[in-house]
Each structure stands twice: as C-alpha cells, then as structure tokens.
Length: 340
Image 1: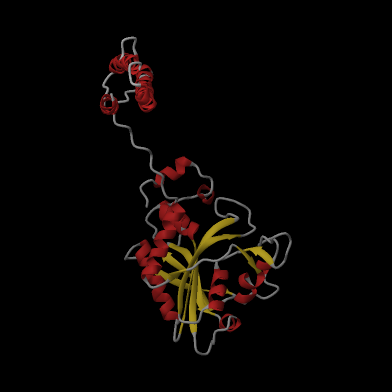
Image 2 (image 1 turned 60 degrees about the vertical axis):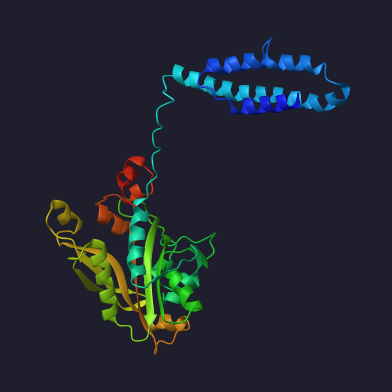
C-alpha cells in the first residue's frame, strides 16, 4: 500500500488540465462516490493495526494533495470563464504598459552636465537650506545688497541667518572651504526666490553653476569653455558674444548671448528683434572671494558661470510659459516622450 500511495502522489502532481471538464473528471476520479480515496479508506480498514499509524497520515496526504490541486485548477478556469464573459480574450498577448518619460528640465540638465563632465568638471551638490555666509557674505555681497531683502529671499522662521538658497553659488563657497585648488566643479540644483509666479518667472527654479580655479586661469579660458559648451548644446555653427555686466562675486563680469537668428516671427519676438538671446552670466572670481575662503588670490585665479535650466529648456523646445514645468500636466509632459 505504501507504493500505491507514493504513485498516487506522483500522479496528482503530474496531471495537466486543458479544460474545466477535465478538472471535474479529476475530482470525480479521486473524491467521487466510487473514487480512489473511497477505495483507499476501504483498503485501510483491512490493514494490520501496527501499520495504521504509518499509513493513515499518508492517505490524508493524498487526499490533501487532491483537494489543493482542485482548488488551484478550479480557480484558474473560473477566472478564464469570467474573462470570457466580460469580452476579454485572456489568450491574447498582453499590451505593453506605457513607459514613464523624463521631465524636460531633467533632460536638459543631464545634457548640460554631460557636456561639462566631458571637459573635466566634477558634479557636486549642497544643501537647499543655507546660512547667510554661504549664500551672501562668502560671495562678497555687501550688507546693503538688495538680494538680502525680504522681497527677494525666503528666510526660514524669520531667522536672518537661515534661508532658502537663492543660487547654487553657495555650493562654490562650501567647496572652496574644504578643498584646495586646482578645482573644476559644476553645481546643478534647485533655488528659491521670492518672486511673483508668471509665464516668465517663478519662485522655484533650477540652476547649473560652474567654477574653475587653478594657477594662471584667464578670461580667455572662460570664453573658450563657454564657446565649446554653446557649440555642443546649440550646434557647431553657434556664435556667442560677451557683454560687460556686474556680479558681486566676479570681476570682471559678463552676460553671454547666443545668436538665435531672425528667420521667423518667433525669432524676432523672443530676441526682441536683435537675433541675440542671453543664456548665462559669468566672470573671473573676485580676489576677495578667494581670500575670504582661504585661497591665495596672488597664486590662484579662476572663473565662474551660471545659467538657469528653465531658460535654456524654454529656448531649446520653444516653450512660452515657465509655469508648464511645474504643473505636471500630462498633455504637456507627453510631448517629451521621445527624450532621454
């Protein structure tokens, strides 16, 4: 009887079922009024008393295996029947799930970072909640500078020394404090300014800043670095121009424009009829900034630059409203499904 029980267990495990009728026939074969379990119980009554303790659990094991297999197969065919009644063809290959897409700001950020990484820049990041030193004082902002005013800066719990960073330049200060030149770093991140939200401005936006400090770094190095970036990002025929400007932490300072052209009415509108578009600010690191952060300004020099990712993305994709980047409208985001 032991061999018979082992064979029955193997038989139960090996069965396959193509239809619900086959499952029902399996049930009758084992659990019906004239089924194999009934026969086993009848045979068990004639077993020697010393073997009943061993064979009883084995018979129960066979019965349990049958009931478990029935429960599984009956559930499978019940589901198929339900799907058929609903008009769903369960035999058809399943359709692919829609793929998630990258946000246009992330696409542009990754492209910009990749260009500068290929030029040897290292990516570093820093905290979004900062103190006055790293956002302003360490970058040569005088105490009366308007950027410190409440209308431009979000202060945390009215603490004049704790604020949401207004630019990623704060990361420059942190890196100059903890490492010695030479350094070539790029700092992407989110920044905050207390501005009214409109199609051209927002209280949250994203920047990428760069810093290069070494011996004998010149303004010519800065110009060639930015020209190389512009040609890689906007195309090999891109032209740039540098206009004098002012930033507290660089001297001399400049605004960088790319020539966009005047071929269409859109070109004329977004360039205000000049053909040129401003893309970033830059300059040579002010010696006061180097000295304030423990770097010998007589031995080392450097340049810094910064750009808004939203601004660059709007130019790249001809997007007219900055608010679209933050509204999570799928109709807008799905337009970038091919971007990676």
